[in-house]
Image (cartoon, rainbow, N blue to C red; front, side, top):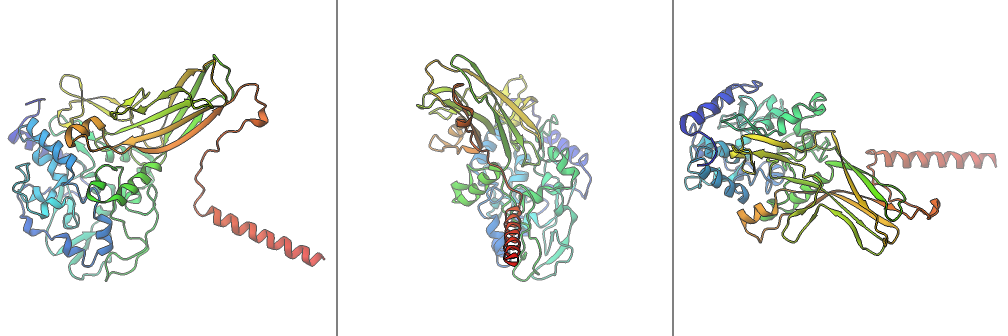
Amino acid sequence: MRGNLVKGSLFFAIIMILFISANFANATPATQAGEFSSEDFDYESKCRQCHAIIYADWEGTMHFNAYLDPFYLEEVKIASDDTDGALDEFCSRCHTPIGVVSGEIPPIDGSEMSDISKLGVQCDFCHVVSGSNGTGNAPFTVTPGETKWGPFNDSRDAYHKSEYLELYTQSEYCGMCHQVINPVNGLVIDDTYSTWKESQYAEEDVVCQDCHMTEGITEFKANPGRASSSAPKREHISSHDIVGANTLIPPMFGADNVAEMAVERLQKAATMEVSAPEVASAGDEVLIDVSITNTGAGHNIPTGVSEIREMWLEVTVTDANGNSIYNAGNVDIDGNIVDAKQIYNNILGDSDGKETKSFWLAESILEDNRIGPKETVTEQHSFVLPENAVYPVTVETALKYRSAPQELIDKLLGEETEVPIVDMNEMSAIIYDPSTPADERTQPEPESESTPGFGIFATLMVLGITMYIFKRSKGEN
């Protein structure tokens, strides 16, 4: 037994204290383990008969695979061993909520679980949530049965009864699971909800659903359609892919499309600026500043179990012949990140003050190097320009991300599983010989996002002006 986690009744008493002291919006008593049977819930196959499009969105996502995720299954076994089972229900409450409220967990090995409990965060769990006792550590209230809850206050009863619940339109719905607090020492392990709550997004009433349940990836974009085959057409139907940044697990289940959406989300999360001298002489010390801004996430990046997430900057400098002058942040043959200035993540400490990637053993935060919403951080890199460098010299920078260290995945899933590395953003600069004439020096054009719809507007405006000039000149003639 490692760490200072307590067991048994004390553990669960502290959980209840946390539930009761949580945010009381939509407050109702949290559903406890064993209150229901798994037979009280409907299989997703029944839901898809009318909600085929929504089902197709959900299938293959991390919510779909919340329990089957092999990384989770290996981690939770270790957590269970380390705590003599004290964390079994705590972790499972978000990964197999039906399994917990049905009393099928523990045991943690899944030997007592029904098939429906293995479906993770599925339709007839999410839509029988009838309230919550706050945020953090899954204080949900579920009421299985004929009534399904959702975000519309004018839904017609059809196959089942439909009820509106404001909670479905609020970040607090997501915050039930996307805010995780160590039940023994109160250490916040996952602060996705609270960092949103403290951001300008919350001040502007931009909620989780506006980014994660629309077609806009990192901003709201209406998705017209119907919630079911018999429902009225609406200006917006929430997309149920609810994709985050995980590119490792979805392809294991054949959901390459989900991984592709995760890549797109990552590539819209941050912007960069590179400051490098336009000229430098051999023997000069060259300074390069790279600024990274969290422009597309309403929470810290990275987020979630951020002690294992890795975001870092790779900087490479080469001369015109391809000779390497400087490199920081490359990945070696074993998957290790070499000489990165900073790994942007959360560093947790155990009871001895040593770094741990096992959040259940964490008692402190040693460092928090993540980038907050709208926050900018700057890295400075320096090198001496060699005497034999051939001009021009190219500086290339890339912001990279992966879901977990390769070493950790090798240990849990085997060395044949390679963790995908995503290029979130790239920028470059060119350094010239001081003798190069100014008019011969060119720099790569930074890619900039155009204002939505502006291209069409500009085209129409130019066309209108052209037609006006043509008609006027024709009249004058």
